[in-house]
Amino acid sequence: MEDWLDTQNNSADIYVLGFQEIVPLNAANVLGPQNRKVSMKWNSLIGAALNNRTPTKVVEENKTAEPQKIYPLKEHIYAEGEHGQDFQCIISRQMVGMFITIWVRCDLYQTIRHLSILSVGCGIMGCLGNKGSISIRFYLHETSFCFICSHLASGGERSRPKT
Image (cartoon, rainbow, N blue to C red):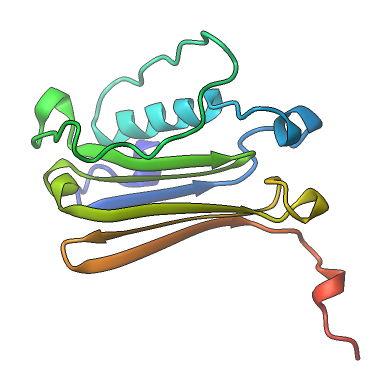
């Protein structure tokens, strides 16, 4: 993970990672309650790599968790290096097998404003989350950012123009 994120050079202020198919696309995962265990493991691995520590073991208390929430920005602001952290997760969201997570340097954490997220499912029956996108937007100082993680159907017979 460290090589993937290039953590040795300390050149990035923000890390945005988007994944697809982090869970099998079966009926239980598409139609059932959200299983956050896999996304929690990814966040643990990413946080460990960015902060140069050992990953935290995710305890399997129950397979389902409460709906995902935006991490509160005002609860606790980490100073740089506090608790061995250089990076803090500002938000992460999973929609079936799609997952996006955003990490910023702890000294920039306080400057994040107007954080919002939108998930749009357009898979089975045109609405389920096996296909679709997650978008996250926020301001860092006076600059706006928007990141989109999408997983759409291949082919697209219906969308091709007729010749």
